[in-house]
Amino acid sequence: MSGYRVPAPDMLWLSGGVLTLLLVLGLLMRRGGRALAWVAGPVAIGTFHVVCRGESGGTRMLVLVLATFLWMKAVVTAEAASRGERLPMLPWLAFALLWPGMRQRPFARRAQRPGAGRDALRGLAYIAVGTLLIGVAFVLRLRPWLATLPLLVGLSFVLHFGLFRVATALCRGLGFDCREPFRAPHRSATLAEFWSRRWNVPFTEMVQDTVYRRLRRYPGGVATLAGFAFSAVLHEVVLSLPVRACFGLPTLYFCLHGLLVLIERRFKIASRAWTAACVLIPVPLVFHPPFVRDVIWPIAGLG
Image (cartoon, rainbow, N blue to C red; front, side, top):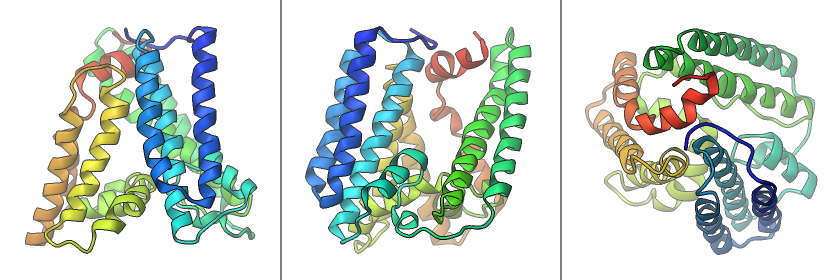
């Protein structure tokens, strides 16, 4: 079932209850409990997969994204607590609910932070451009595959470069030292730079703190490959599980990128063209046809 629809009241209560439990779990993880944090996510995701099986693909995606997001907040909180890093309750709630990032450190101390107004204006500008591109996709709705490119770019502008930048501005306005999560990815000269410092930096921070930190002492790129494998699993949850199709394709994309990062490191490859080709050519493995049809197209009335 494609598209988006409001779930039945009992489903809304159940979903809200599970998501609230994940948020409470994150609060409790400020005192530690890594094992519980790691187990809670698969349990919540499995629960949603079963109870939301009759919901539309878009609705399932939204629920699974929220569950995964709050689960990762709990995990990184527990990992930080194991290192002696703990936030008071209110800064932690700001970290968990206002900020897409996965490191608590910017919320440890409040001070005057310049640039909030500028970030907000830039975010609003990206939202405006993204909305325009989504409108272009709507005009092209009778040719949905032709409309897919402006639709995907428009959605990325609205969410990644728009709303997330506005969230950055809000957090900076509250005195927290946050930086925008997406930092000119088109300037990346290597895949390693793209993934570690420019594209979805909060996700990279989470992988570094939960996976890479534990495995970096092993030789042969073990930590790098494990980090990409973990990313692959999470992307399967939010891209393939909602539409119950094309399992393994996101895994192939991210495992391929893990290998390409090792190759470019070995042969010292540094080129924007190389990076763009590696990111874009296999991107249909991530945004595979069932996900595009059932989750992306309905946003602009395509299909």
